[in-house]
Image 1: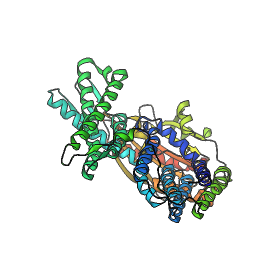
Image 2: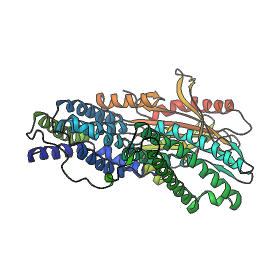
Image 3: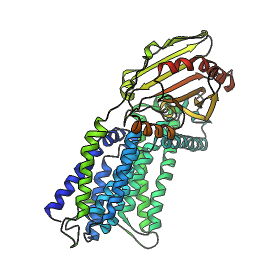
Image 4: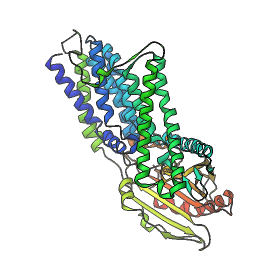
Length: 511
């Protein structure tokens, strides 16, 4: 390729990164979490993998107009992800954009060589919260059950209630952090890389990938059993602190060793394969065979398109577009007396406020008398929602606090002066404690419970109305051991029927 082509690639890549800069900043935040801490290594390894495959194939350079199609779809994904604050869609679009550029500058044969690297980039993108929460919950229960089975085989007296392991003198709560996802995500990415390094039959590569799930679940269950044994012998302090963290790292290393051992066994099973050890170093020699050297129209069109979009959208429409911020009554004035319910105002900690970036909020406990179970009301208001600053769903956040979602349904609450309102109704538990939660989102006057509907209306109103304000309204009450869920429902319903009109007066009116 000539210098002009190199210059066009440089401009195109720089424009692409400018367009996705906001998406990358949020991605860096996810990479700071243990489950995705392997993320920064993936682009580097993907580049090394692509270099080796290009060096082996040495495809002929043949620019293609077909690359405009995935590039256009990628830009559509970016718009949808930005306006709806669903950043994962934008990140998927980035991978499509890279595929489009490869087609445009290098051609179809080069894309066929690079596709394993593009797939590998998917492991750097976090799962949607709704998928993550469900997967975490299922793995918690499965790991707890298998861990209890191991303890039972060892002869230890143990009883399981959901994610709570009762050892008699101590109770262990298998929380979200112990679900095994911090092992599963890195190990799956490592398993995919191992499959790329193994030159063998396709079924062996598939088996290597799928086995990462089994290895993770089994080893995490053994870890839970190990914690149970150490707690039974030396006390509850063994379930936290340095020893607990050391056990976690040790189990992950064992997972990797088991995967490597499986890889060696598969090589000798059936026709002998081999490990591409040469992939561990940078390849030498040319990446392409002889091909076109001139600058083509697709290259000019793609580069010009990205450059214009980077200027117009990155620094214009997306960066400085007019945002209508409606007025609302400050929530500091929300009444502490509603009917015969009397509230006590609370406050969120500074680090939580910094993480949520709420524009305004109120949190308070209401009760009818000192002996009655309280109702906790929380209203979080955002005057602007954007990538990284958006209303958070309790269904996604609750498991992170160690609570287990026992029921997740939709309920209709009768209002005196309005038709029934729909709320998300979830029952959560932690050990012997249970709570009932109602919540919904007020999105510019609309009462919404579904995540997809939330994203759709945010996308629509952001583009057409230039408004992205929104709120989360959440009510929580404990379910006492002496009462039924129906009694807790009646308590929340009674309070909500009185508080709902007040809530509406403090939030911006609809469109």
